[in-house]
Amino acid sequence: MNDTQLDALVAAADEGVDCDGLQVAESEAGYTFALPEETHEGLDESELRERATENPWFVSNWHYWNERDRPEAETAYLRWLEGADERSVPERYDALADGGIEASWGELAIEIGLGDDGDRTYTLCHEDDADADTAALDVHTDPLEARELVKHDDRGRYRPLKTAPTLPTGWAFLDLDGRALARTVDIVYPATVANWHLEQQGDLDISNWRETMERQTGIYGVVETWDRGEGHEHVDWVAEACCADSQCLKRREWEYDDDTEITVDGGDGAFPCREPCSLVIAAARQWTKLEGEQSKTYEFELTPSEKEQIEDIIDAVADGEADDIREADVYEGANRYRTRFLRAKRFDEEGRLCGVPTDDEES
Image 1: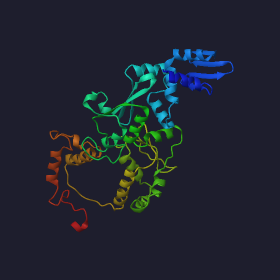
Image 2: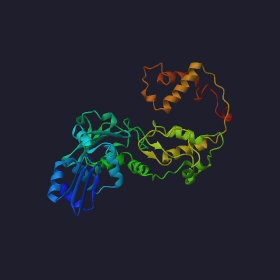
Image 3: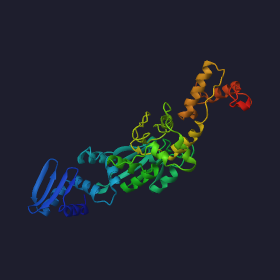
Image 4: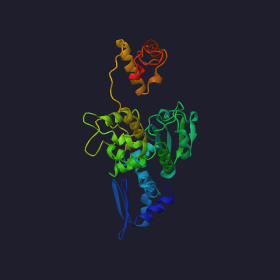
């Protein structure tokens, strides 16, 4: 605690201070200084300053959370990260001073440390790098530099969905203050803090599938025609394909409409998804066109193992595991050599499975 914080406390006593167990007030009878286990009344200013000086963490904690020009959502988020509403001031300050407090947000690992006079310092990195030596990481301090860092995954592929679990590794942001941390998080995962706070306040504006599709125009207007017919759970399929935790770290809160829930689980992410995103809408447009086709019956000749292999290939691609199967893992159905052998055996020169044409015109 410093003199600036102490002066601010005395000045704030007129309107009253109430923060995490600290209460300070001024009346005709003098000042009141109260903590969870003690209360002192009828104090003059010098006595108030003495009591405050004896309890510096309570004063600096109040000053950090209340004497900053910080948006409400940002304050709520930073307090949530360090568990300010669940743990007492002494518990938190002991943890902050003894190695820091660890928190997570999507794939981000956040470490909160104790700075000068009760200020916080924040370190941000990928959760896979939480135990890495920072000397081995690409270190940054400017939040804007996160824009380029998160554009591509570790394999160099562009990340169209910012909340996909494909955040690249190998970097860290050090010595951030609260404002810089919040800005960096917002660049990595846009609007997640704001929507999280709105949800906490009960003010999250959710736009369900039906009303979102009714707003689509132009080439995306076709999605509105993909109606949820009886026995045709197409929106469930969309949610299962795009909105699982393995594909997006948001927790889906939108449903089909106000009266119809989607049967697929919405995920466990810390931050909510308030409406179908642009990626979901673009995918749904393509599926709308594909689902307009009439089903046909095809006859293929496969061994039981080949049928199971095709199922393994589809699962591996859908779950993003195909690249994790080594060339030597020939017992895996989606192994590259096994798949090439299946193609050599069952595909004709035109690339057709078992030589079976797709359309009648090809016969």
